[in-house]
Image (cartoon, rainbow, N blue to C red):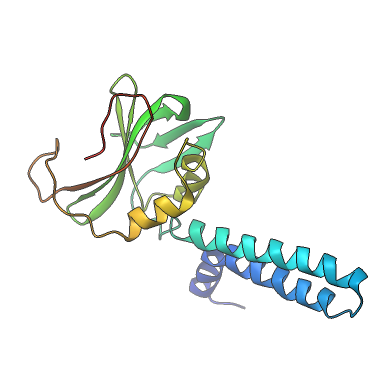
Length: 181
């Protein structure tokens, strides 16, 4: 009955829509009149605002899954399932997170304390789960991730081949010996 592209678009906005619904429900409770109803109404409205903001931030990570591969986040491990460049990294061992633009594609480049790298395209299926996992890192917030996605990264000295690659250092583990550029 509903066109599939409209359903896909609504799913992308699902967190924001749910937050707005909670906000409206809280406003309805608040309009109950007495202080007994206004305090719970304010609490539900605050919950709705927080839910909508979180949904907005998560929406930035849920692109159209056009890149190959699947991202899984399970028990503190980020796993990228891909036949050629797959791998996994533990969040406890993560030392550095970069946002790399390579040939028009945006990628997360993660390096652990041993120096192993995992490269994950932003357009891979399951990229929305990556937001919550990365915000569990010390000193990294969802606002930092969204700012990195919005930033127009300038070319820097890169370890990648000269293909017009651009890197933006988003986060380093405190005490890992890696200095931000």
